[in-house]
Amino acid sequence: MSGLWGSGGPRCQAALAVLASLCRARPPPLGLDVETCRSFELQPPERSPSAADAGTSVSLLAVVVIVCGVALVAVFLFLFWKLCWTPWRNKEASSPSSANALPEALRSPRSRGNMADKLKDPNTLGFLEAAVKISHTSPDIPAEVQMSVKEHIMRHTRLQRQTTEPASSTRHTSFKRHLPRQMHVSSVDYGNELPPAAEQPTSIGRIKPELYKQKSVDGDDAKSEAAKSCGKINFSLRYDYESETLIVRILKAFDLPAKDFCGSSDPYVKIYLLPDRKCKLQTRVHRKTLNPTFDENFHFPVPYEELADRKLHLSVFDFDRFSRHDMIGEVILDNLFEASDLSRETSIWKDIQYATSESVDLGEIMFSLCYLPTAGRLTLTVIKCRNLKAMDITGYSDPYVKVSLLCDGRRLKKKKTTIKKNTLNPVYNEAIIFDIPPENMDQVSLLISVMDYDRVGHNEIIGVCRVGISADGLGRDHWNEMLAYPRKPIAHWHSLVEVKKSFKEGNPRL
Image 1 (cartoon, one colour):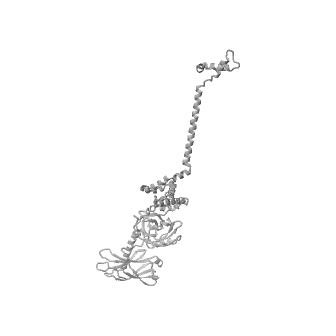
Image 2: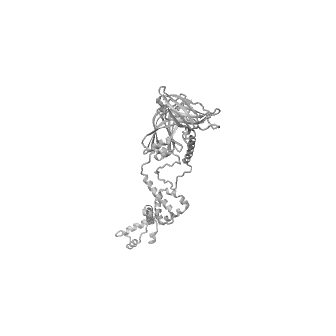
Image 3: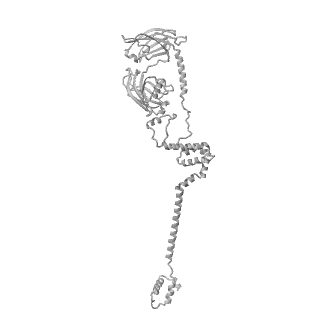
């Protein structure tokens, strides 16, 4: 029976199923033995192989999925523990291996050279702080390296505090952009990048003004010695109110220098009443003498109201028949009322100043200076000019004023006034403003140029003057007075000079 139970096709399987159902019926049908049905029921039916294989596959797949899920959860928890748990990172930063890595890096010369570049990285701040803590007990780290690390941390903290401060004024940005590279401009760096700690200012390649000042002082001493040996001149002044004439009487000269090979001179005197140079008068020539007596009168028709604006110019020359006349010296009397009111004749003695060429009166300019330290603003107000030199064939000029801001011989900015037509005494009353930080006031100067406008061709320079800490005479005094009295306009008259005489250290570009 068992052999038939495990063999046969689908028909046998169906027959067995029918037989099993008949045996389970009570009572069994006719023809079936009870014992035969019992033996048939006791034999278990064989399972289908396909159903058993399917159950095994499902179980295996469930086991694989569970194992993979557990593995992924374990990996995720490990990564979370390594990356996000703060005590683990602190433990890693303060581990002995990291502490030993810092001294090894500091012992290397190449690493010491790159230390400045590494200090610029803000990500290494925590590592540096840990290194500082270790350096207190580690004898291998040099003391200077420890100090540099501490200074870096302090500077980094200070710069982080400064980032919340207001930005600096933008009005001085253009001024600082034009400054020369060798000039030090003190400013606060609000960036995150730290400057190199070992950078120190150097004076290599810079011009040392004190050397030139010493030379100029020597030149002034030579000129003063020459001026002492030019002698003296005696003259008198008187004004005739009836004819409105100024009478100049040249009396004599004393102790003139010898200009000829024979040890004497042939002197004579030229007389001008500035600013008018067209009217030129001169004395007779006295032969072979160093103490001539002239005793000659000269008349200049001029209204009494104009005498305050006039200057007396005396030029002493040595006559030479076959060559150019040599100039001995000159005398300029700025104030005709210096000795008296000219109502009666007054004798005047003056030292003859050394000069190699006859000076030309170019005129004067009046301007005021005012500086506001809190705003960093310098205001120059051009008021007026007087007695300017005539540059046109009409006997007049078309003047305007150009003001240049100079620093170490370089022109940073320039501004100018309007043009006044056909006049030698223009009035402007125009303000020119420059933005200069207070810390740079000792490094700049102003060049004031009076120009003659020409419609055709280039504009001509009538004269210039300079004010600043490095200027001479009135230009330096005017600048210092402005700095001593801030927020107060200080006005002065300045004489114009030629361009070649305006600087001792060289001519700037105009």
